[in-house]
Image 1 (cartoon, rainbow, N blue to C red):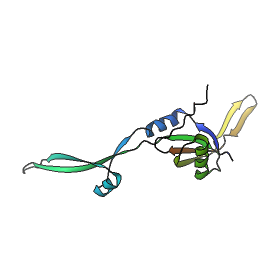
Image 2 (image 1 turned 45 degrees about the horizontal axis):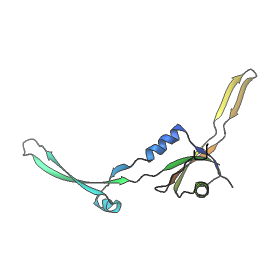
Image 3 (image 1 turned 135 degrees about the horizontal axis):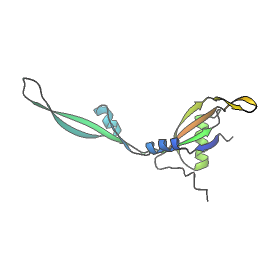
Image 4 (image 1 turned 90 degrees about the vertical axis):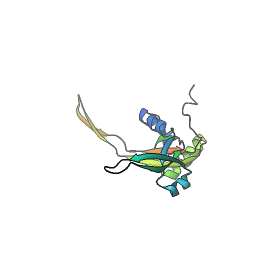
Length: 147
């Protein structure tokens, strides 16, 4: 059963994928976490000035690590689709390895407009959006089949 309705190629989604495709530097909370993450130690020295006392120089060690780039892509999917089914279908369609899937449910919105016939009321359909994170090095090219 096809769960993916269409890929999301909007300006907002493009901004999200561009943000996630930049390496980011983070600080580890402590030395134990730094060893687990493979963080680099950087030593900083600073001077503490106190009233009536001599200046004191202190040294602080900060552990930093870079988070690897992860490609993210958005899809509008059927509301009954679950994360496992979405991941299987993306892997089958685009020959990539899916690392994680995040889903967001959107409620249908009511809308009304004035016409010659009077007030027309209706609603937009409810839908589900899936944001798929791919394995490092994988990417999807939505424009490859357009000539």
